[in-house]
Image (tube, rainbow, N blue to C red; front, side, top):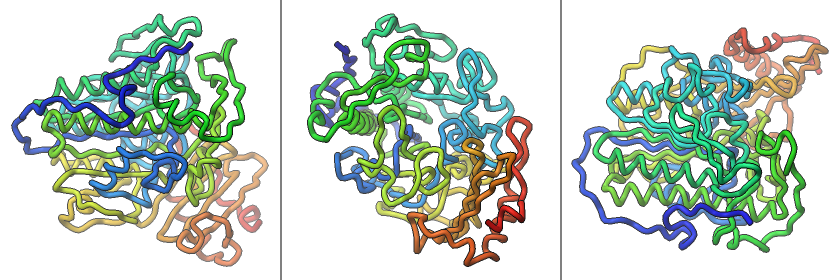
Length: 485
């Protein structure tokens, strides 16, 4: 039987979170920032973005109290490079991490030590910084480790491959490995995401008297599909038709990236997203109980589109809404993500179709904290849009690249979207697709043959935005023979 680690109140009340006595604190001149990023949560996986098979009441409440974005893009279509774009203010044609490259024995390719990141910006501004969840931007003892990238307090998974599994045998507490014997040898003792979330609430308590940047890269609802046996899964069990998934329950990949079997994948996925929603509600209520909510900017988003791994079924839940594609695609379903920003009394409530992306976060928070940004960035500050003060700049275009699946590139310019496939294959089978997102948000009708001049214009943007890097295969330049196909 899978034992459940219950943090305060989660099993006793689904979404009914106990509030502690308010602790008055002196008002700060600069706001706290809580940045929550879900893992592989699709654009349509929240009820405030159209999900109909389950509700996400706490995130919906955050959306009602803040600004809900309908045209926000992740950094790219998988975790590590998308988060690297978020951290550095660079798009995936410039950022040094452009894929999920593993570094043995544990970790991923590292952010360079000299790079400016969100954490270094907040540190310069006098904030205490915390990160609780999945890192995936460097090995535990390397230059990309959290504590070497400006994180004061880290607890969670250093390696995103090991973060595939929720009953892992160890986590990392800053630079120290913390073994979890309760999960050893295939046991189901501690649900690690509960441990990580509990530590994030502790961070709020410990730093209530200081300005803080709390980064919460939750693992939910990434595969594998598994939750503790508590009131949340019982809420969804038997509600949906099920097709059991047979996964990896032993052998060399068990809890080393392999996904466990799951008899109830639909109910489990709904329970995982709902559990994430409870976490968000608890963060909101803890901020309120500490008297910090009114002076805290909260952002909620996802790192890329929905996955199809471990028994996940995004088509059943309509996880990408009307948008085509999934994780690893550069169609809208792979890169358009939910994005909510809430700051009581500062951010106007409502909805915006402003086009933005993850690389806008660094200039936004640089302006928020009054830290002069000297480094080159692909982003623009969203602070005028969020606060209603000043003139908001707009992007002339957004660029994306992805180095798996034969190599993929995309550029969005206004309503136009160009997608190139097969750009790193030796047999030169490049395919170019052009869409008008205003008329065709599902990217069904390829207009490349109808608008050859627009294709050429957008191809020039692609050429100018891709910067070659020694660690990544050089994407092919325009091949006129292939472009005609």
